[in-house]
Image 1: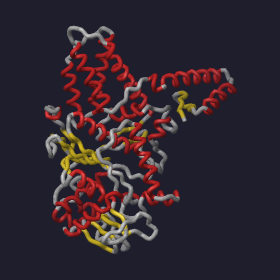
Image 2: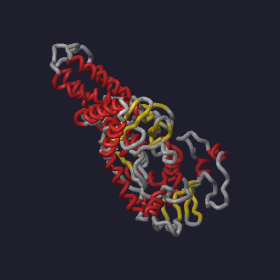
Image 3: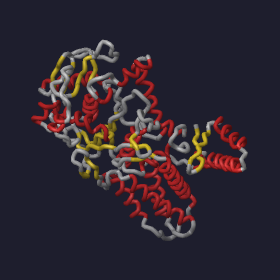
Image 4: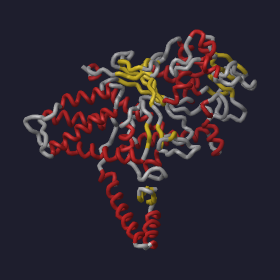
Length: 493
């Protein structure tokens, strides 16, 4: 019997707004599609949080013995500015600004995306298709939607007819938006658009003469709409209906809403049984934004070269921090939160590393099987990683008590404890067993803290020359001191 046959997972389905018992379409097999990045810039930390959540879900489903086909796409064409049907393609715009080929942009940032995910110990998806690699499939899909009467061509562009679709289907059922409300809140067309209605969205856009990325089609030389690629690729690799579709909360409308409409218009079926959405990542209580400067990218967080955090953090510490919040909760990234997670992470690692030194007794003072069941129950409850981590900390406390002679464990229970805590910590949460010594944080922090103390003494003695010398020489080796109300902190550049 497979492990999944002994466990019952409940998933919060964005489509119904409820937790539902998970039943795959095909016994023992799961098809899962997650919207990947548009590769025109370095991957955003908020995107990393989303992909990390689904990496954990992928890991758990595999652990249960499911055969999972996990598809995560690369958007390398068709994603226009502001997620709209007008403006420049994001990749084309970047290529024009940097005076390079669009595919050079794609290559650069696809490599960056993979490097960052490798740093955070992600498992690769089963398939990672690209939009440009599936132009034929997208054109065929458009033909079908036109033949079924739900799209129209104007001046070489093809648009999805939302109003006509809504007469026989329900547009907006995922995001809980009514078309009448969308019409009321949308300004009238200015006469320059080819659309019949503002709510219609592009399936194919005719390329302007200056547009570099273009492909031949029955309607024009142009490029596919952003929403279309996911419908084409998910259908090709997972079938007309599949189990799980994931992505960030910001994709629910219009992107995922349009995916549903395209599938139903072309195939006559709702494509996905369980829609899952990861929530947003904030920075110090505010939305991350390049325009306001309230943003930090993964490299800056890992190196400490930023203005928000007092030090560099190891990848597993960041991963641990993210796992301490439900994937459906807004997560506020702060220095205080990361420092607390770092302490907790190393406390857990220290306990796990003690396991081999424990001596078995003739009885156990806690019910190991009940603890193991609680770990599975947490993950079965919509992948509740914060509750799982609480149970892992319970185990860490128990391990330390056994070490100190305040508790006992049988050899059989010790084997179950070690196997279970290692499985959930490393195989499912995706953490790596890094000690304080290996990370170098303790030694560096200790040395810099000593220099900060000497600098404070110099300032107290009005020896400002020595104070400045300590600050300046630390800066020369990439350690920036920051004086604040709470004292002096440092970051590594």
